[in-house]
Length: 207
Image (tube, rainbow, N blue to C red):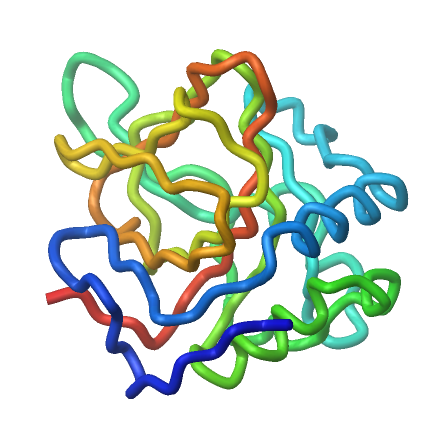
């Protein structure tokens, strides 16, 4: 069963810094079982040809399967790719508010319950399962909005870095919101895959 603790919108158990642990928890075994089911159906989308990035979309723009194809799996971000320190924009802009339809092929999984529960508390955009392969890292970048994380599979070598602070988020059913509007990355220094459910959160403000 999903454990839902009554909270006021945007309040959290730990609201300091750029990692906010939320007062809600999901069943980790059911999350892992659902992840395994989705993987059997879909498999991670590596068609973008982007090293160390793979994802599975769980929702889409209603009636628009093209909204979860190609670069729309990743979406716009800003990065500083070289020694000049100049910021550049990558990929395509996404209208996150339009992503309201949970994919029918996954409705039988626990992720539908998770999606419905989260949607009552937060204004969500895209909801995805994101994979970090062993011994890999993302680019140093920033996103348009905060992200909600539910770690499903992880290991002690998996860390997210925001500015200069690094944090490991355990796979225990906890929900975190991270300040992805600041420069950050995520890396997996272990030898097993890291999988998080990651949602764009459109109504959450960091102080």
